[in-house]
Length: 250
Image (cartoon, rainbow, N blue to C red; front, side):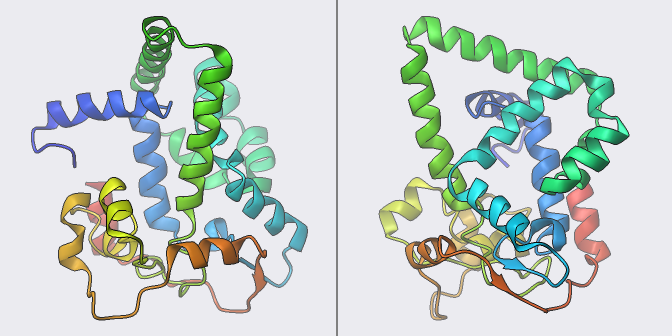
């Protein structure tokens, strides 16, 4: 939703993805997949369910909180670029990715046009290389910047879903943060509004937030996550409404 003109939107999307670093198509497929699987068993990091080993849930949660979850995006792009057949293989999707919970995400990625994904990943490599030479970056400095970014990005990824109802659309929170932080993050913390209205650009999300209703504190929820997942026997969410699914496919 960067720009109404599709060409401009896609061009800036590819550049922004190169900073991550990943591919616009990769980000889009994964993000839309999140909107289809939110609060399902594939995206339940704050709870452990009956029959699911607690250590597995702990591993996934702390990978998220410590920033390692970010690494899955550039690493996934590298695997896609270098080992296309392996990326689509059963052993990769249903054995390796299943354990961590990436199976449906990787299955989605395996269906997209391979030529475009590879073009965008190659662009990202050239873009990052150009940055290193143009800015005279050291490897240590580059790594430290991305460690900081990984911790920052991962701190956002589940705090706005933690301990919400197991509902694909409504399983999110509009979190309370300082106005300056809200501005810097382009209203990202209005995350319930984003899930209820995924077609709305981030800058307009405050229009869809009821500020008279209580909102959980971002910092309080984030710190609570470090205490680990809690047990739940809440049933899984109902299937996604077809009207919402059509908007995501569009």
